[in-house]
Structures are given as C-alpha cells and as structure tokens.
Length: 141
Length: 412
Image (cartoon, rainbow over all chains, first blue to last red; front, side, top):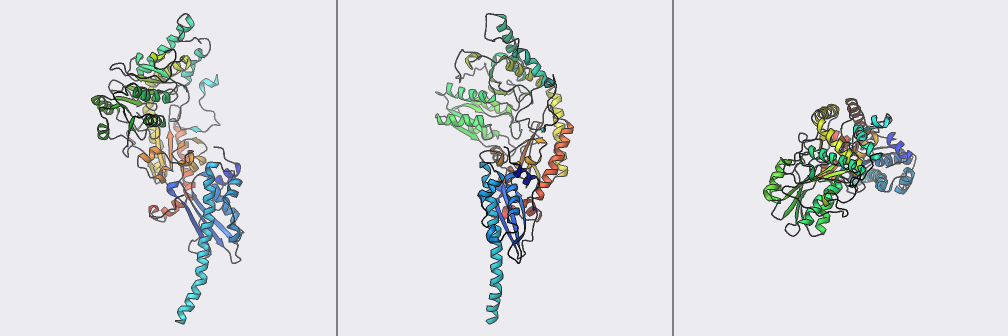
C-alpha cells in the first residue's frame, strides 16, 4: 500500500503527541475507538479565555493512517474556536492525507475524536455556569 | 553473474518473512538454468534425445522430492504449487469416494486454500467438520478421534502453520486416521525441508509441497499420493494424462528440476540449518524480551519450526509498527494490513484477544538470515515499539493502572 508523503510525514513526525490534564476545567478530552477494533484515539483540546483552542494533544493506538489523521487534526484545531473546530469533516482529513478507501474509517474516527473532546469541554463549561447558580440556590434555602 | 550469488542488495530491507516466500537458492537456480536454454525438450516427447534428456531431469527431481518425505518416486506428482496440491488432494478424494464417504475433517487454522476448498465442497453437499485448536495452536487428538467417522473420506491437517509455525502431531494424527480408515492429507508447504517427514512412519496418504517455501522456484509444487493402500483421486485438470492422469499438462522441466534440487539441499542441510535457526530464534526472542515488557508469543514455542516467531507487542498496532520498521520486511496479523479489516483468524482461533491480535507480527527467519540481521531487527523493533507505546493511549492507561477491559469501548 503506497501512502502519500503527507501521511508518512505525520506518521514519522507526529505533531502534538502528549497529554493535557483531563481534570482541568479548560481541557476537553475525547477518547474514541476500541482496542478490539485496532484503533483508539485520545484527543484533548485546551481552550483559552478568548474562546480559542490554544493547545491540542493526542495519543493514538492504531495504524499509520489513524496516527496521521489524529496528528493532522491537532494541527487544524489549534487557533480555532470550538464552533469552528466542530466543522472539520472527515472528508477533509481523508482528502488532505490522500487516505486509501480502506482507511477512510481512520478519518471518521479523528472527526469523532474532535467532537468528543468538544462535547467534554462543553459539559465542563456548562457545569461551571450551573455550579454558582446551584450554590446560590442552596444558600437561599 | 551477480544474480547467482547475491540474495539481498544492500539498499533493500532485511527480509524476515520466510513463511511468505523464500529466495531461490543460487545452487537451485544453477541447476535450473540449462533447462531454460539448451535442454529445452518436452519431457513427454518420447521420440528424440531432447525429450529423453528432459524426462530424465524430471524423473531425477521426482526422486529427490520423494526422498525428502520417505516416499517412492512413483507416488510424487508435480503441480503448480501447494494451493493446487491441496485442491487436488481434497476435492479429488472427496469426488472419487463420494458414494461411500461424504465427510471431511479439517481445522480452523488451515491455510485459506484448504478452508476455501472445504467451503466449496460443502456447497456441493459434503459435510465438513472444522476442528478448533488449543491455545497452543495444536489440534486436540481426542477431539479429532471423536470427529472422524466411517463416513470420513479425508482428514486434512496442516503439518506446520504458516502464521504461528506450530508443528501438529502428525504421527498421532496419522495413526487415528489409519484406525478409522480415513485418508490423512497434510499441507506440508511450511514443513517440508524444515522438519523430518516420513509418509510411512506418519501414515500420511496425501501431502502437499510448495517449491518457493523451500528456496525453490515459484509456480511449482508437488502432491504425494500413496500407492499402497492406494489413494484414488478425480483429476482437476484433464488432458494428455500426464502425472499418472492426476494432472495433465506438459511438465515445466526447469521448475521441476528446481524443486528437486531445493528438496535435496534442504534434506542434506536440515539438521545443521535447524540448529542454526534455533539459535537465531532464541537470540531474537531473548533480545526482545530483555528490552520490552508485555510482549506475548502466539502459539506453542516448543512445538514450532525454528524459523518462525509470532509475537504480540501489546498496545502497539501491528501495521503502524511495520510502517516504522522500514528496514525490516515482516508481516502482521493486524486487521489493518488485510483488505477485510479482520484480524488474523489463526490468532483468533488460538483465543488470542482481538486487541492483542492487532498488535502481532510474524517474523520469519531462514537460510540467508544472519546474526547481524537479527540484532538489527531487535534494535529496530525495540526502538519503534517504545516510540509507538509513548504515543499509545492504551499504554498510558495501562501504566496508570487502568484495566482496559473495564472500559466500555464504543465499537465502530
């Protein structure tokens, strides 16, 4: 199977490998895939006070295409708002890396990973807003 | 004549996939060359010296193959390879004896060409029992004994598995088959020339052999067909009645000569070569085990040809590992290397967890593998497994003490 230069570059020099503090309020974590299926992606975003994604990290268990797809999306989401990041499509990832048809599911997984990370961040942010309200309610009682 | 002496160019990766195919031994090529050129006669031409010369070469080769497996030369027929031999043995016997016997016994870890042949026969109305294997990869003899009935025409069990290299208890299987009156066919593509085989002592009635797995040419194989008690087969290919009517078509003289020469060399060098390979196998395994935690050998290590290791590198997906070790040519049981996206059915049959099956590599050592190459392989594997584990979320979770089985993964 011949892979594109871009894919090989992301595999050999993956961007943004690492881990952010998953308990931090400004970090959203997405963990998608399953070991039994042969690919698991963990993607994390850190959102700054200005609402922009200031950092993104990933770790991936999977084939070269899965690693490259997740590496690529960490690059793409940085500097974007979460609403913008949410619009990243698996087809864009597949096109950019010239994924062979049998590897399209890797790009689908990468899209799922971003969505999961954003959902996690939003859930935390909602809690942050809800908490003071609840506290106020409790105080009133 | 560099082509005759050099197996690997310096710019090529180290070849560690000897179960897929083997390079032609330069000595084999040398024996073949005249039959491509001035000794070009048709071995079936009876009227002139060209034909006689070719026939003599073919018959010598037949004898060389027969000797390797303790057979009589009249019992060896040439085919295009082990796939054809397996097809002919199983379909040929099933078809011939179908009025009396309509049952076939095989195992779930056979090569696809045996399994697919059996599936085909099921569609024709035959019954097939697919025996499971134990965790070791070996067939359970009690289960085999229970499966073979007076309706069983042929029991087809491979001698050595192509993925995990385990050696089945051939003599015991042969004994059971003989007691029950079923023919014993063994696919010996990975076994011939590597372990001692004796069709008499092991009660083997049909045996498939491949040329290119034993440093011979591609495109040739052989089928041993027992004469006493006689095994009868319906031919797959009809024509001029060559090869005792089992396989019509003009014999490819140079390929036959190559198979014969390869068989003779393998037989002569078997003892010394298997000792040498055993040392290399141990060196490889010890090298990896001393530097990498959490690696697992798939299949029984003791009942295994020395030229094979099948190892799971937990938390590292097999295809991504192969992409990393560019200097090594190996193969993987990972789904990502197959078009079907299913991990190896052989590993699954051993009860290897799917997640571990995805992390497996098959490393094949052979005649031209050196100690230096093994050391380089260990280095490259260790480096890339460590690199990929550093970027594996599963490795990270395992290090944190999280039980991966306790997590509800979303299947996709």
